Length: 404
Ligand SMILES: [Zn+2]
Image (cartoon, rainbow, N blue to C red; front, side, top):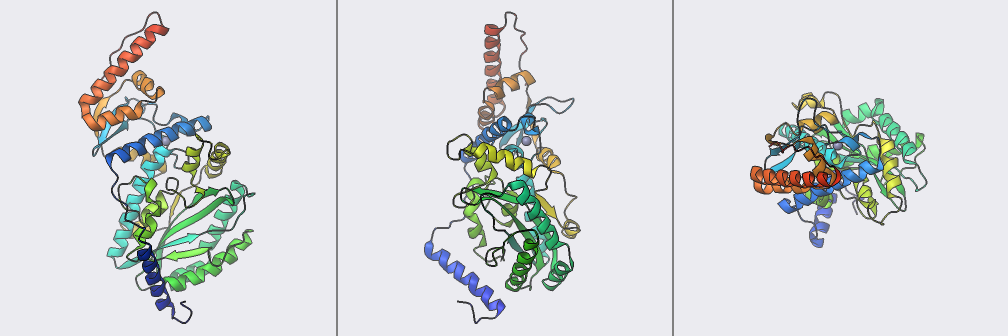
């Protein structure tokens, strides 16, 4: 339908057509702020998933995440805003395997990306979302797919063609991620989303046409067949893009509307489309009979992604946009807890008792609702339970009161 239009007009017509189609369907709504109850459910789900991941990955650092105090300190409860959490605990910082750390990391990374987008648009620039995919089958092993896919991506960005493409389209920097979904019919689907920071007058349609052909050519060198139509796609901002991306928002308890930043940083957590599973929805499926192979698939995924970076910033972009030096995932997971108020200390044996009985989220729910009084009452109750249970199993229980 856009055959006889010049590039710019084609792009505008495509945006208008998309907007019209969505308006006529009337099904897309902006993501509303999550209620307190929803946030608590999400927290409980993350802890449950962390337990499932620990069971599946013996010896992995996720198994000790949040259990042990940081050297020389004591476990405690702190408050950030109106939310309480376990503080002063060593965390694993695994963005791939740990749903609790992944949520903290995604929250910080998406704040950074939003700041980057705001800074660049304030300077008069524009930001596009690029998606790169490849064709694959259910027989492909993830490790091999991922190795070839990342090699192809490196090749795409590191050569003369890429330099010329960046210059031609006024690109000053890029932030790209690495993510994967799994589907019953086509197996593992590694792909990449990238934010392109470009000049305001750059033409996304022309850029998309160039990169479609280049990606098909580069990916073929690594043994991939790539659809010219679907292999590379550029979305430029328009009024409805937040709505378009809101398709993923139901699983991201960020409390804010979905955007470019969340598209890159909540990849493990968001809900994939159709019959596809993100890594953490696969993890959730381990406790049901939905996908019999889910435990093995999750283990394969963690092995394949071990040591890989989720997010990559091009050199000099953070400086250009006035952002601080990038922290490691583990540092982000710890730093997330820094902007908080310490509320109460917990003896490690009492904490272990609460966690072993799956009561950690109950403690945090009580803390959110009743504050310090609720925490005191809960810890005293847990202390009594542990004391009387220990009397059943041990003739001489040692009595230590909870320190709060
Ligand atoms: Zn963790």
